[in-house]
Image: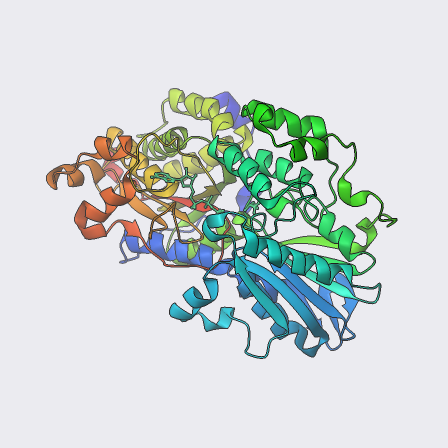
Length: 524
Ligand SMILES: Nc1ncnc2c1ncn2[C@@H]1O[C@H](COP(=O)(O)OP(=O)(O)OP(=O)(O)O)[C@@H](O)[C@H]1O
Ligand SMILES: O=C(O)[C@H](O)CO
């Protein structure tokens, strides 16, 4: 392992990692973890990301370095869980240049925002934007279908003098259902529900959705041609792929029926496909390109990611530094089964807290685990190198940050979510490593504020979790077997370890945080 690490030494990327002396901070690790998480969420608030991405200059705007002239020609459409707040800010910036808009947002969101006092994320009373709520339980329904029709209609009426601002965030696919005829909404819903239920990834799911939709895979940009299209995208997919976030309605993508059929075959759905779906997939080209006589639209489309997990991690790191930690970002794309992911953090904690040089088996196991959890060897080696230097040079506390979206294989029928289950499992890993008291603290939280079907975003754990649970008569393993992490954390110490930020109005996947205290002298 020493040889592997030596390949990465010295590297310029280490310069930005502060080598400051430990700052004395009286606040508990738990409170600081919560503050760092709050900073991550704050950085990707819908109004904040829109404000940062549009620079208004008299009668023009600068977006992604390009200038667009405003002539009372701005139209706005949007779909996704964070879109209401994005639209409210976009309308404030565009002023009376914004003439018309339609957005498709989750059922009940306006009332929820009002109840939470988040009025700044609501449209003004005399807004030119029509808000359409739908997609109950994140499934495309007739309300979302009507909204998609309204959006399509608006886009189709535009001319080359118009500018269409498209606001996109996670959940956008379900909020923009426009099945290609003769596929019915019900048929499309069945296919996507079966795929999701069978464990298809978001990449697989959206590959299929794109092939069955008029507006996805670039269809919306095509409808809006020849207008100038500008898409502002809040990413909830690992790697920020423009063609997959909300199924890429303004990102032209080729549909390969073979690819779509192979996804359907993988999940054993080929034999139960409705005739309409087979019919559509039997045609060689994307349907929205046929019979329209429209030329290539790509020159008139600007797609720009304005918020992502990386942005959230960056700002979390800044806050961590203010709170006395040395921030260190592992990666923004951690995925895979929560068991493997919990092992990852357990090993990293052990590596960081080992006496003297950590045993080489830890590094080897970490490198073996990398591909399973979506972390490159390069990122693991860099992280181990920095953690190693922290140990030998006595840098004080470290805040290791990562993001992504692990998965849970559901075997029980309890209440929980992937963040709470991950935190629980990491708590067990930390215990097994027999780390010193006041050792590492782990936090996992969904940036949308809701972890699975629960009121919590996640939880905070440490190596003392097991004893704490035992003392209160709670058997961690049976809660885990039943995927009942929320019930566990609710009962444990009156819910003190739960992370409950409430509705955050944004979503850039999850944030993971391992707070590593300075290693006591007697351990070295
Ligand atoms: N009891 C449970 N224990 C652990 N995980 C669960 C449980 N119930 C559901 N989940 C997991 O929660 C996930 C769905 O939760 P959530 O609604 O937070 O999803 P999401 O991916 O964040 O949605 P989106 O990003 O579209 O808002 C699924 O991955 C599912 O496996
Ligand atoms: O809407 C969707 O397709 C998912 O949230 C991924 O962006």
